Each structure stands twice: as C-alpha cells, then as structure tokens.
Length: 259
Image (tube, rainbow, N blue to C red):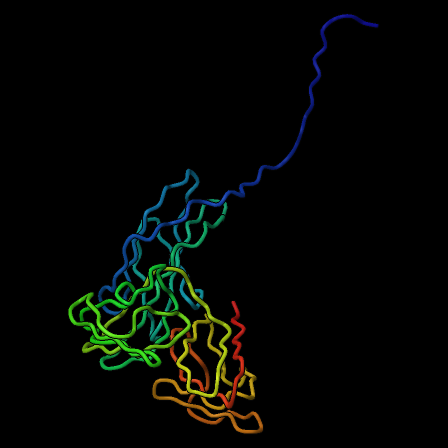
C-alpha cells in the first residue's frame, strides 16, 4: 500500500433557490387625494434583495413603486379594494398588507356593504368623515353629532350586513383592516339587509336558490318567478354593495365567492 498524503477533491453541482418571502408592508396612512385618487403609505423593513412594492385592486390591476407610498385611482366603479405586497428580485411576494376599502359615496344616502373592517369595529372606528350625518342598518341607526361622536342604537359595524350611509357631500370613504367575505346567510321570511363582499360580480341568475324571491339594491330590484327566472333592473350583485333580500321562508343563501 502506498504511503503518503492524499487529497480527495469532489465536484458537486446544484442550484440554490430563494424561497424566502420578503417583509410585509405595514399600512400607516391612507386618504383620498385629488380627483378619485387614493393615497396609501406604509412602513417597510427593506430586504437586501428588494425589487419593488405592488398594490393590487379588486380587478387584479397592479400598480408598482419603489417608494413606501403610492397613489392609485378609484376607477369609474363606486367601490374598490387595495392591498400591497413587497416583491424581491426573484419575484417572491410578501404576505398581503392590510386591505384598504374605498366607497365613492354620493350626496344623500348610499347603500353599501363594509367589506374591509378594522379589528375594533365600533362605528366611530369604521365610519369616519365630517360630511356623514348618520348610518342606518336593519332595525338600528346612529347619528354623528360631531366628528367621531355618535349616538343611537347602532354600536358596531358588521361586515356581513348592509348599511345606508347619509352624507351631505360626495366623497370617498375609506376603511382599513382585514378583508371580510360573508358567503353564507341564514334568512327567514323577513327582508334582510345584507352585504355582498365577494371580489367578483355575481349574476343573480347564478344565485340558484328558489327560496329567494326578491333582491333590492340602491335604485334597482329583481324578483324571482316560480320557474326560476329573474326579472327586473338588478342583474348582478356588485362588491361593496348592500342589498335587501326577501325569502319565502327559512333558507340559506350561499354566494360561493370566486377568487
């Protein structure tokens, strides 16, 4: 056997994949800007491989920036939602930030569903704005005496319910918090005021529950005939809207929200 020192060299080939998600933006401020624009700001602990931030709306249109703020448009719709991810150079996305919900309220009474709601859902933490005079729910109501000061039987805002918001001036009302989707409603034979918070419009023809006989929105209504045909001016449910729903007895309404 040969004696001496020997050196063994091995060549190993492989790939290194970056699968670590970047840091999540933390929303710090949001407001309605000029025109129909929404201004959003956040804190962010920058990752070494940071590429950009991406803010996404309900229709999946995305807006990008390398800053810790962005201005996004509220398009011709009366409602939209936004969340922000940070993205690294390997296209890894962070978790979603808190959502921002934006209702374009008109002067007078707007029938809405609150689909983005903070953990503290007291009415004063959810419904804000000096132009708002009152909010009416199903069997409850509250008036704003001074900005942030509310009186009435409506204490908390429920994202499964619909509300009439009365304002003396048109403006964009914003909420921030978690995205809320109530897909199932247990109804009796009374009119129920519910919210529709699925991300996509829902044709009334797809509701498919023969016990639902009438749906009333703001300025629109539809009725289901005995043969299952819907007739009326309301043809689809829109995200962020509230609706009065009438059934002919105890039943369950399930929307089955699509991504």
